[in-house]
Length: 230
Ligand code: CDP
Image 1 (cartoon, rainbow, N blue to C red):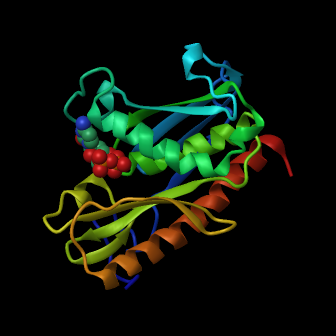
Image 2: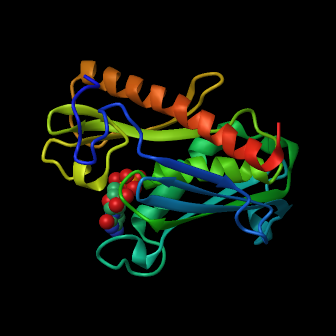
């Protein structure tokens, strides 16, 4: 299965070339830039800090507030500035993917703010954003149970694939399964599916994503080591 090749000559279970760097925004408490092929995202983290507006305060825990935004020049049809239904949904699922890794109850009455800006999009932006956010949270020194690691797997042109590009996602039979996990325990914190697929192929797709997440985990740890040493 790994022998067949794709438009960009990758193997079916191969992730696009990855670049990861922690600490790219001087004024944020923590930050990171992550690239998967042409998909490029920057994440910045602030907090735990006093929460405004105050009515959002929770006496039992910190409130994790994520923002996902696609810059107008990130896609081929210039995108209208600002948030829309898609970015609101993605902010929600990304928040839920990151929350299990954090000790929010340790910082009551505060907010942890995570801003993710999609600089360039070629599919897989939610996964890239989760990887960048998780690195940025670690870079901010916020305690974590584990890094959260994410990739999408799926189907295009009758093949099961890891980390699809937009060209592959546009195939008629495309199935897109974004997944996030905490690799140390194997806990899955995000699992979505767009498209119709058999239960057997669903299992294979999840296995592909799991193997992908483990490779991404190594790249995330390397990025942190590059900044903080061994
Ligand atoms: O980016 P991700 O795969 O997590 O989410 P999606 O909603 O499945 O979007 C897939 C891709 O469609 C994005 O990565 C972009 O390349 C493209 N897209 C676009 O060109 N214009 C938009 N307004 C939204 C998405």
